[in-house]
Image 1: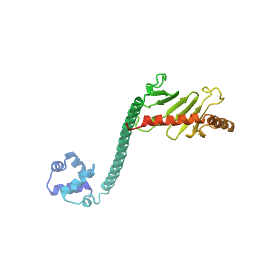
Image 2 (image 1 turned 30 degrees about the vertical axis):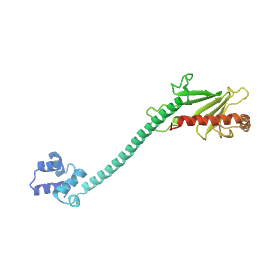
Image 3 (image 1 turned 120 degrees about the horizontal axis):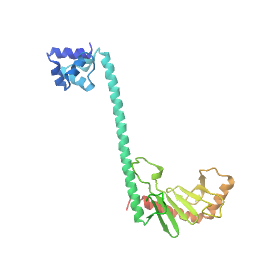
Image 4 (image 1 turned 45 degrees about the vertical axis):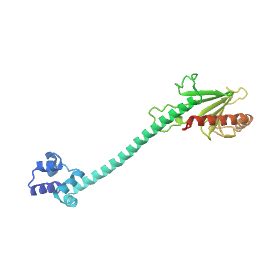
Length: 251
């Protein structure tokens, strides 16, 4: 006997019409009719209600109805899958919104700090759209770019604040407190015959380069860094302070 027959049996034992049973379960009469003729099955919540209403165990209600058991098992698995998927999606949405708000807050903080420390918008940069800032002190120029948040809700390299320091022909990119890049350009310094971007430490010592360097070029770079060691150290120290002022979260 399948579940539809058991529902019909229990209903007739109580002399209930399909309408009365449907009303007790808050479903339509056609739904009850469909169960009883085996056209479809009640959902899990309704099966529990039927069990309570007729005062019979779920085991007895579902016994021998292999199709219903299989269908119930499938529904249970699908329900668990949807639950897990919904939880994961909710976490992703919450994380996205949360990080987006953090980026917006950080951007506002950066711009406020730049203004309070005397930085000005770099109007000479036609591609900055009001997001590039510059300041010059004691003959040294500092430049930075603040990435507009928009609807970005996840971290990008562009969101990190870096400061480019220029002292005449010397250029250093302060990426963070520990990562510095010396940018050597023959267009800036007529005394060199090569261009290169190399990672250096805070003491202006050569660390590595993203490009493959010949031993001769590496030697020239190290010699160049040594020649301007004091200048680079000063630029790194001052640029690091400038960057710290921009990203500071406290007034």
